[in-house]
Image 1 (cartoon, one colour):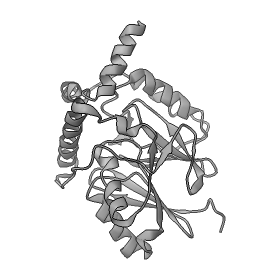
Image 2 (cartoon, rainbow, N blue to C red):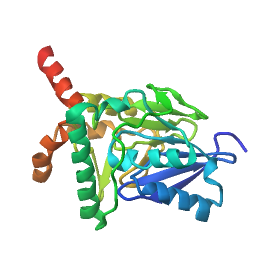
Image 3 (cartoon, rainbow, N blue to C red):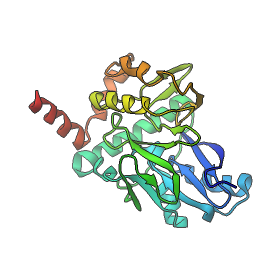
Length: 266
């Protein structure tokens, strides 16, 4: 079997969809999900894949929100599975204001799960990920060199997406989400200028299929303007409730330092 050939599996997590890439001799997990999703991954290996969890050779974390970074630390602690993430991801919740932001984001994650799915699970997780592998823009993934990581700041400063060029397959994390039949940008988009640059960056990649953490799988025309068509949404917030909550999502120290630097530049 060719090294780049794999079977794609989906696991419906607490808030987000997790994706497993099953190769002949190894498995890759795209994002760690929420805390209790660690158990869902283990059960999936036992009952669906019929493979030992030790075949999971790498877990990716796209950014530090609870529905993406919560499950990976548990799986690593229990089964010694390494984590790969942005090289500065642990800056996001640093300091006192970062600790407060971590609490707020965990509570908002619960609120989202309750509103969307009517369920409530334990979701507390460490605010420092301490990745085993530190990823920079366009790095090939360790142990899975057919995949590359791309930096896509906008939602946070340290978001990443993961791209398989042979299959033209892109896991977008929270770069975009699907709400009903609409494709929208994530809430909050804390760095609109950087989100604009990220969308333009992704528009340069030939993509055939998108894997969304929130919204499933989307087939796209590789020559389409899918990402640039989303540019008018940058900086726009159509929901009053989101506008009210946004200040609670802006406590992380890098949000304040970035805005201060923008003011100084102007």
